[in-house]
Image 1 (cartoon, one colour):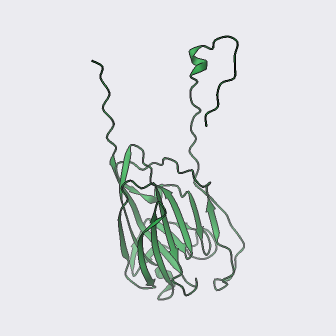
Image 2 (spheres, rainbow, N blue to C red):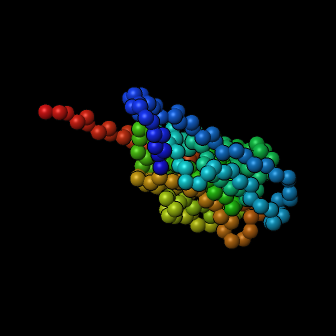
Image 3 (tube, rainbow, N blue to C red):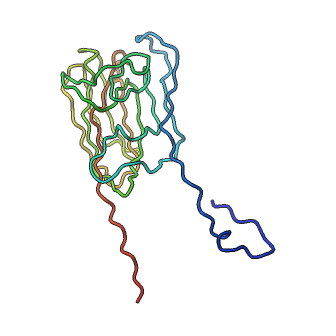
Length: 223
């Protein structure tokens, strides 16, 4: 709720009645939280978390045309082992220790390397654009060989819109292609497929958002 102006005995001039709004500051990308290294097979660890306040989906830089999700800030995230890696596989516990993203022999230059259970949350509010489509290749990263078993899920405004089913190491990538017209929030989730989190290194490869230009309203003319 906007605050009212304090009572004044003398009239305020127009500038005082209509002050310039405070400059809006873009929230930086979520901070990485680190913790001590533990064994990959130890299953009692807490997930590593990236966080921004709930309920504050800000306008991002999504513009008309093709947008690589890599350039959008993660509003909130959690990861089952180590930090979420950008343009790298999950690797181990340390940040930046992953390799080139690779699914069944195919490599990718852009994307996210995560570990079940994980979640990434993004805003779909564009700048002068309405976003209409989300695409990505998903699969278990080649760094774990034939090990690992995960499920990829996509939620739009809290409703599940995609489920990959169980995917194992060396399975071919599956393509996600979703209509996101009118949606405000994108959540990318990876679960452990019910068999524990060991070797569950999962890739969201080449994630892209496609948007169309917003048609500005015609100015009203006086007759």
